[in-house]
Amino acid sequence: MDDPRVACDVLVHQDGTRFAVLASHADENLTLKPVLPVGQRLADLDDELAADTVTLGPFGIKILKFGAS
Image 1 (cartoon, rainbow, N blue to C red):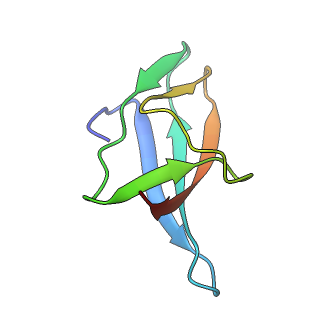
Image 2 (cartoon, rainbow, N blue to C red; image 1 turned 90 degrees about the vertical axis):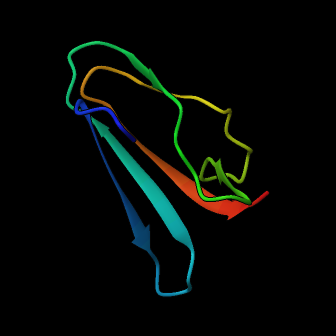
């Protein structure tokens, strides 16, 4: 993410599953387009493919799971 209003990190579970954690520091809704490595996609925690953009509510947090596209 190249937006100073959003903190992001990747966490890796002991089974190797990788998660993207996004946290908004803004008091308004933000719609962002995550920059991903080639061949990667993001899905919600139910394995539903996430859209190309992610919307965070004011001071919201979203956790997404990495997967191959």
